Image (cartoon, rainbow, N blue to C red; front, side):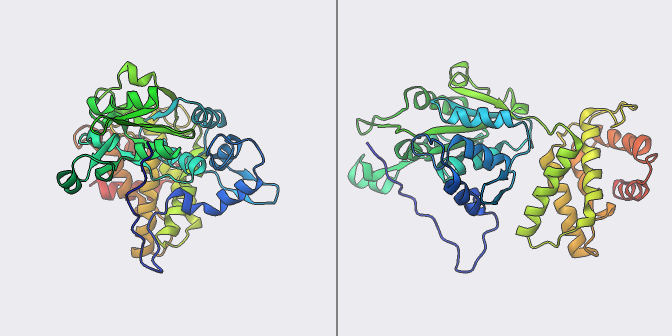
Length: 374
């Protein structure tokens, strides 16, 4: 049985620029250049070879001089394992703390492998089984009874029938009984439709990428039966401050251009400062290893650093002189660090007085943070 796509995309108005293009649209030129230069074997229905997919994620320069920008900065071996998993019959689970680019990596993997990153199920506490299996057009169902015309395929059903890559975000947020509906899909590569006495069988090229936040343990933990159907790749936080600064700078530049914010080359100092604060509080020790610190309750992830700097850049553009300064990022840092007003505020004040206050070149930053913390 083949289920066709019954959902039509709503096109933006002519001349309108979408706020966040899908990966396959935003990096269409790079994907096209990679496909043209890629002469390596490709698995069934893959747009690129596994080597080209890994190059798309980690960046490189093609023989014709085309520069492929890095989408993920991290150990290449992790990327190679993730890509190789998708070329087998095992599903891929990207696991990590919040802000380790799990969603970003899954989107770009789907874009490079299938040319379509939109076959997505967003996991929440209210995700119904129909989002994973299929639903019904109730007008058709009442008028004519169960039929293929009345069936509404889920993104996974579409991916199975078309040999594409599907995505499930925040798998551990989905109720356990809905999670378990994936077991038959992943083990038998089949989705039964008992109302029609039929089934959808996955064609070659189908696979699934799921993401999960390891801080969500105990919310809806995966059953051992479901976990066995995945090959798990743990995405770590950036190893070095320089790597994290590079990630934040690149993403802030991309987001800033999409929001028409002016570039702020002088902002690298504040980016490095935000990253330093986040890493020290996250690790519980200063960069020089001399001072032990208390860690706040939040994750202080790279994604949060990107958000703080982007917000600061917008403040500088709209209410300042366009140059990113300590006062532009201070409020964002306070909001990221102080999640628990009672406990985290004590941690933040202690860090300000024992570390920031005494650090050379950080006086303006100290004053800005004291001002917003008052």
